[in-house]
Image 1 (cartoon, rainbow, N blue to C red):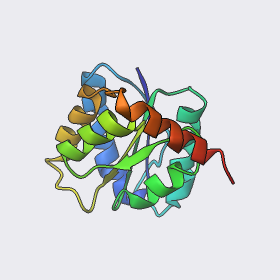
Image 2 (image 1 turned 180 degrees about the vertical axis):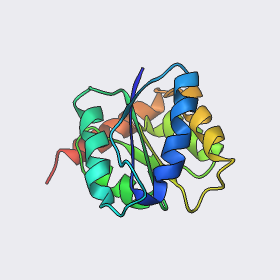
Image 3 (image 1 turned 45 degrees about the vertical axis):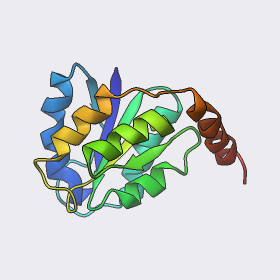
Length: 147
């Protein structure tokens, strides 16, 4: 599975720590930046990941910024992207099971560093349950196509 990965300056260190874990999980990682802790605009990096996922060039995406929120908001502007901020393993599992989320947003400043690998593992170990959730996700997709 190919993963698109990006961060802003606040999430840079955590993004770098995630790459070995993702490879250990057997995932192909495309790092889309940033490349340092120098200040950058998070929407630019969220868009890079979201567009890769939307076009099917990556099956999943991971974004890391200060809180995860700005990245998720930006990514969710791209059709076909369902980005979720996860601050715990349970939230990561529920986002995958119930929402078929395809982009994980993490907060480097708001999530204890020891929890981030656990959240990422939970995300990739969890599959979409489908069933009653399928129609709900379809409504999300329909809404993303409306103006």
